[in-house]
Length: 369
Ligand SMILES: Nc1nc2c(ncn2[C@@H]2O[C@H](COP(=O)(O)OP(=O)(O)O)[C@@H](O)[C@H]2O)c(=O)[nH]1
Ligand SMILES: [Mg+2]
Image 1 (cartoon, rainbow, N blue to C red):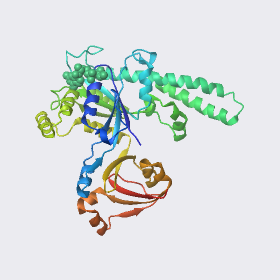
Image 2: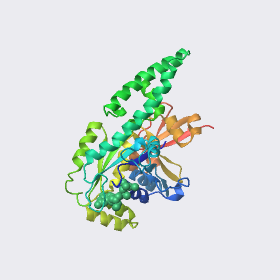
Image 3: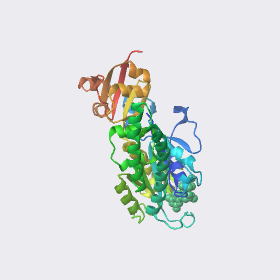
Image 4: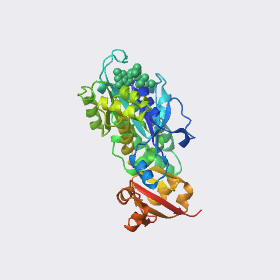
């Protein structure tokens, strides 16, 4: 189970600023020996204060949060789908992510050039989204050619499948030409299956981030309204961040100093934490915990996951050899203060294969190998 977020937007909107703030926030290298961080790729811990609270009560030092991968995808400019800028290179990066974080410039700063000179968030969003739509139209065209050939196949099954695919692709193409992203087109489950491998860019969940001025946190920023309207129309999420402030805060290592600085800015929490949580929620992700006396660890899972599949997130062997799960909720631990008390109050349950794991549960899986 992993969550990959790709940061996109026009040049100079603050992508790298927000990316570097996010990635300098967190991640202890000893926990993630595998995360050789490339300049544009970083692992970020999912903020969840329950992890520390559980570990404190159980007296366990080592805590391992869930992580999200962020990619700073540069090179998206008008004409990218025709090969401008880095051209198709960035498009292939976007194909691999689960969530698109679309940064929109809502700050005025004469020292920072804007490729179109004035600040106009709706126009900027449309330029980027148009490139995504054009890229999908190209992908579909290529696939249509392939499937049109199969219409003449002697194999009836192949032929039938090609007929369905061609009809669907033509429908999607028509909608895309009207600038409707694929995620806003109603599709049956079997239709979704037909296009799954195409990895169309406009099927991805989008989180719009208004990068606002350092001065406008407390006051109204006049540029965010059009972004909110756009997001509502598209059923997308939107949050506001001041990239510059967040970067400065993230760079402060001393916790007390950091807190004071945030108070001075009038911030209760890092906007970056909100960004991570929002991306998490967008995909319907939740968290369960494991604890083995030596470490407490948070794991992300998709809402509705059954116990064996949840065990499989830890290790595939756990899923195959699943026997049962010992489960309690972290809130019961907070209320009763110890595992022994949880048991006394009958809050420790044994659950089987059909059990749906819930957010906040602490689970011990039993399995045979
Ligand atoms: N005034 C102001 N400048 C910002 C803000 N965020 C980024 N910048 C500046 O805008 C310029 C471009 O930012 P960068 O993150 O490199 O943009 P990218 O091209 O989207 O990666 C840099 O000089 C940043 O310092 C902000 O919130 N306010
Ligand atoms: Mg950049």
